[in-house]
Image (cartoon, rainbow, N blue to C red; front, side):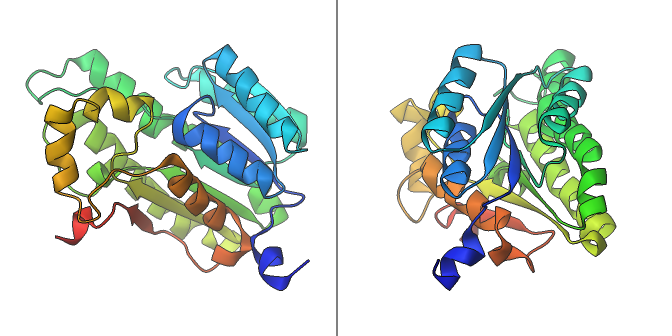
Length: 256
């Protein structure tokens, strides 16, 4: 095996990916499996979990599919327990599940605020809390939190979503100062619009999407594989000195 491949391989690693049934999460499952990792795929859609499992096993890797509602308090905890029961330890945690509501601050009801923050912020906290002890014990681990550019810059009608992602960015930095001494690297990825099903819901209408696209110097929205490839880099040994960073993959949106 060429030396550069050795630096990026995930052979022998076990990764838990949330939001695994579609979009960035599904793409991440495929990319990580292609690099050699066995996968715990977590999601709510059973048909989507079956699709993810089939795709991962087609690549020759083991997949454990776990159905969980991450909006609940017990969902993330139970998913972590099942993952540890299946694999003994998790080397790579990819918190990719995300939900949004596009409403002004004044129009955002309590239930929407709680739902968005429970999935986008509390669930990553609970999963990391449950899986980090074994990472500490083995003195090795990767935590990759998929955030958003809206956790870095304000977007109109994104109060709950932006707050959840801004909180996730800071949570990741606290993970770093508490766990870096145990050779655990925690980073966030902050993409611009990616045309996942959620991205299509918010930005698919050209009347809304085209003005947003015009603000991106690259002139386009992102692709799921572009985010998944960055997840692979952060999951690999090649990124061992990168820790506590909010990495924007935004076509230059925040450079202006």
